Image (cartoon, rainbow, N blue to C red):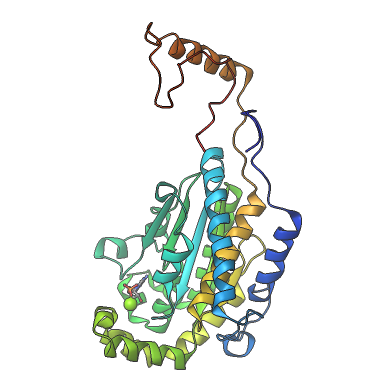
Length: 337
Ligand code: AMP
Ligand code: MG
């Protein structure tokens, strides 16, 4: 960083890099108001012109670095929060995507929340409650590994889940899914208006690639732990899920919180695309390190004088062999190297 002005803004990503990211993710965005037919509209094997995995590695590293930089600024500004919603069918790579995409980010600034089958306590609450309770705070990136969208996915595909929710009959019977989409849209708008940006990612896996990944989990001993016969049973509901996803995209991709359908047959590509969508949102927020007020700068100067006056009178050499000496207040101490 240039010299020592503590109020210097962190270097901004170039406009052309920002436009390149926007162009790259555009094909994955579900236009608000469009009617989606998942199988027809989105190709799980799409590779976006990146021919080789090796070319992708550099891009992913670039994305990871961007996320790390922007996450630090998001935390310092402490004004906006980001909620990343991750949905997918089994074996689409949710866990690996989180691991890779967030690998450069300070763990203190990221919170991953996984949602399983609801407990009996959760079933006794309104359907958005458990998600509300695990939202990120300002300055944080929260990742929902599965999310409130399960309430219109698994619950829709297996209606016995809805029965377990003990809803009053009149709310269960009339347009229950439409009303859930509306409730979700309202809730997300409320969050956006309060400074929480929502990034919605669906990892789009083909049925054949899921079959191959399940087989690999069976064949490779160190992958066995990932295999669940429940996942294979769930595969029988493939078409019902495709339909539930299509409906969900059609109703809940909004201007403030659009869905992105990420091609997921190539894990490396899915990771690049996911990182790019999250980076795009952070670039758009453009969080800034806070600039200190005159008063705060004066306090800083006073603290510096006080600390420097503590130098032992013999002025012992420091680790670099230099004699410790007072530096003018307001100057940052430069790191070595
Ligand atoms: P996993 O993420 O593979 O550990 O599995 C979590 C399981 O919880 C999946 O089978 C989901 O379908 C299920 N699940 C998550 N949310 C809900 C929900 N709201 N209602 C019913 N089942 C759910
Ligand atoms: Mg599972």
